[in-house]
Image (cartoon, rainbow, N blue to C red; front, side, top):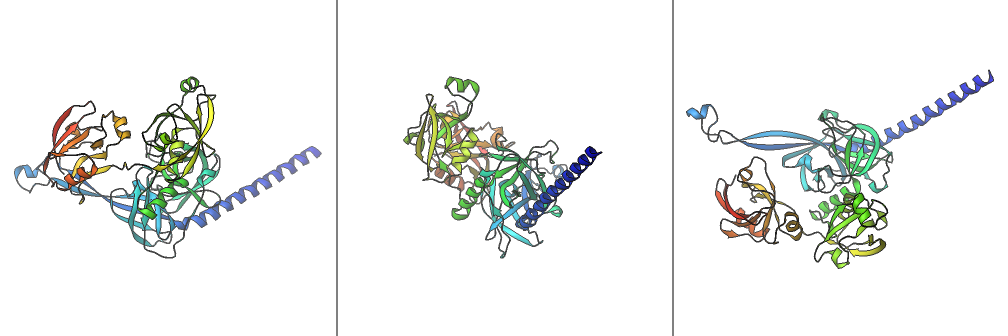
Length: 458
């Protein structure tokens, strides 16, 4: 009898304590939601897509018989839905893919007020964009330190899934993983993985810790259906903050540069290099006149720490360096020939490598491919034996350029019989091209063969 009473008493105490703990967590969720939600906004971006008539000059079937005037191109309007976070002085941080190519951007606040937003700047390499609205007395989110996150930590996701009517939806979960990469969503990938429910429309919203700090910008989900399957990804706040500050202060992102080509270690490489484990980043090449070369870093070195912070994968090293500023000195701990050593490196500004979409300044002329100024890195990547000219880095699917066989890695030698030695000469020549004008381009393929192609400017 006494044993039964003791068991009953223990069970009652356990349930009471458990209920109290859950109530405490619930109240913490409520406090965080109430403090952060007012700083999370809903974004609608109006986009225009131009679709060319597949029947050429005939708006089939009527124009074939001459009933209507030719209609070569039609415009279709669409609306993209996303979220954003107010970070101060009317600035709103969101994802680049939410507002990319938008002609009109509107922001709806927590209190239902609507504002037209202007684009301050965007960075496709991190999928971050900064907007601005003219309003005063706005709530501002508190930004946290994403480096302090731990797997298993509680987090809340706040945003506008699926509809503007579902603005400021709050979901909860944990940090499922850190430094996730290989998603091919952006150039710099070191995502926070969470099982907090994230759906279309949440992009650009806040991932928040239980201290009410935004520690990530929700960006993507892994799903076969388009809805949440418990695998969501957020851009770490420390990376987003660096991009945000650069855009707000200078209108562009200024990245630090180490100047090495890196690769991931595997078991065979680790054994061949005499390493004790498969951790660190292998340097396969050092670029000429780079900070790494000046610091006497060598091909075959394995970087294991930056400023005493462990780096295990190429993406971790890439993000670590990209989050810093040119002129900053860092201590690299590396392994060379089985021995650990430290080297101080003064980082420099990354050489400009922003792609230039092949459009004139007015945006009226498009050739269907993207070029980038040639460089040591590009030449090495595509096997080009010169660093002169501009290189094709992307070709629009279904474009005339693709049909004519233009491929990434092709080098533009001349355009309209003018030598193209750099991006400046390319853009200057392009600005003189008129819409529907057929232009003559001499390209050099990756294997060194040259050929002329004609492209009609669209």
